[in-house]
Image (cartoon, rainbow, N blue to C red; front, top):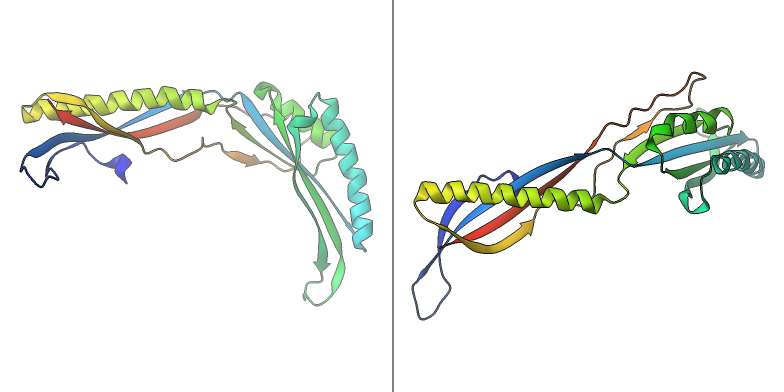
Length: 223
């Protein structure tokens, strides 16, 4: 991958029909990592029901989902921060796979939670009072672009430092920047934890930090 490429000093023929001049340059890569404490959590809560008929499973699920949603809203979650992440109704087959033994309905909700230090208490309330049978959590940044911009500045500085070292070793002076390319894959990683139904004891969810990585390629002319 280009992000792992060592800085190199190159020369290449210039494309010209009337001259044979040589363009020279130093092509380098730079990397940087910025660590930030997450400021947003994404909670996942699900309920399910199994009955002998599809309509029965769906009706029972609706009652369970209504209870869960009411508890989530009672925690102060705004409508814009509560979304349906999945909904399904389907048959359940006997072990031999030949006969339908019932129907299962399930619904998963995603909650944007703006207080990362109270995630454990929120999960406990969702399970113990809201009836959720599965929960999960992931963390992120409300404004990842700010952290990416900070890391990008550091990565370009890293590339310049490498290029200056290469130029000094080659006995030339570094010129102006010819091109800058961002090699970073899109998005900020955020681990998701599926922790099942919370136990009666208070749930502990350490927040930690997220690493925002940026890689760039910077091409310099030779002065």
